[in-house]
Amino acid sequence: MSDVYYEALKDTRGQLFAEIQKEYFSRYHFHRAFELAYVFEGEAQYQVEDKIFSLCTDQIVFVHCYYRHRSFDVLPHKKYVIAVPEKLSPDVYELFSACTLPHLLPDREFNRTLLPYFKALYACDKDTPSIVIRGYVDLIFGLLLSHYKGITVAPKSKNVSVIADILNYIDKHLCEPLCLAEIAGVFGYNPSYFSRLFNRCVGVSLNRYINFARLDRYMLLEKQGGEKSATERILEAGFPSIATFYRTKKDRESFS
Image (cartoon, rainbow, N blue to C red; front, top):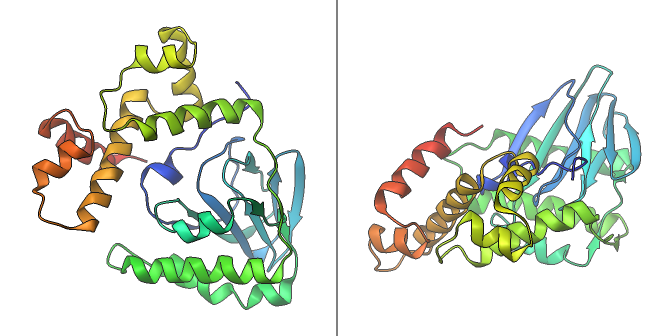
């Protein structure tokens, strides 16, 4: 499992990741968020699965969820990088459930028509309404799919598939008591080995990941509204206690 690293940051916050990157080297990793990198100045390099791409200005790299990738830039450049988690845009995930785009999106003239939307997403902050962010995201992905021919999604690598199955299992059982020994047993691992495996591949402890996922669930319940109290939502999200909820909330605020 040494060739795979799950980058939790782009998923566990449950919101848009948008930044400008310059020279940047990253570990070979994957996440469940879709990622787009738009080079708007200079040249950059990406690896997606076993293919390496050199991008010039106004070219885009698209990374489907679960695809292993990394940036290993050696030349001066600037690029917008956005990552879209499933909770932000279910429409995008439904759209790309059975198809993907080519990794390299080379049409510079067409791509320039999307640049204002990348700039707009980068400019969004905590006060930007989620419907505005989702609108820009849906527009970008919809226009890309209308211009570039979709292709079949490749099967996950064995290592990524194992981690993905573990994460999906956790998602399905968030409202139930979850412990290391139980989850390790489901996947046929010794608890001690499973703990090290999870820490190495996910980058956070099992307990921390579970609590972050429960916090995302609480935030979704809060957005849905209704007559339930905060305490009822906390318990429905799977937290064993109110104190755990507040500790997790504080931990999330400092998470990077």
